[in-house]
Length: 399
Image (cartoon, rainbow, N blue to C red; front, side, top):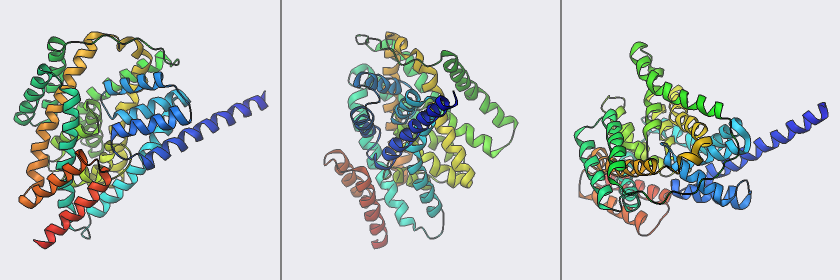
């Protein structure tokens, strides 16, 4: 019996090591944003390791695009969950996320010191203009293909500029979901697919905890005056309401951080620009922000808080997804929400990104060049970030 138990433990340990090694490899090499990440994941998990087939992988992708949060990270969490349970999900997330967390934390530490020249900050802010415009172009084509969704996007952009608060954005997303149900045509419902069994008791517990934290944290923040609770609440709410991927976290976090005086718009956008140059999920921008706001403890709190909703939602929704995904009302609500995401990102392109980054014609020229390199020449984002950051610094010194 002991021998069988030892063999089983060795088998489980081996599986955990495989999950960590595979996800760390992806965390070190996955440049190019969430769409590119999903391509890397398929190559590693489906084609090379054969941990799942294309049909199951496609369904995991559709689930994670339905949920708020970083889709590529959630796919990695889901694959780790199916492969090795809760511990497998954690290991998969750690491997994929940790490299960019460490890089951005180091960047935040360096940039906050006097040795870091402001000219580099200028270059990274200009990159942010091009990156957001590039993301907006791609998302607009796929998420606002008809007049109804384009109207939702335009109204959402207008309201986001008129009501520049995190709560205002939450109300815009909610209203867009209702508008989607009322206005957007639903497609033919997809066939259901059965996932490997995951305990429904665990799923319900995760969902209850997700909503409980969303409701209780703002109350605790006002009752208990703790900077750590306030920080956790800020990033947990951001991770809970971000539909459309990592780029949309920009306006939500900016509305919470910059007006409150926690950091300048320039420092915020520099981190966003730097996040484009590292592999892994864009949500690790939270690590940079946490370091600026509260040092090492800020990094840990911000990083865990912004990704925790993804864990809870994947665990909570996965067992029920086969049923949920066939409901037309869910599909049309999500289409309306995705259109609103385009509008919110359009508003963010103007404020804070453009108004903070573009000060003269030279800045605008560099932004146009960066946008062209990303959108039409298909140059890797990290190359564009480094090139334009250097060019921006050179222009500032020259002028």
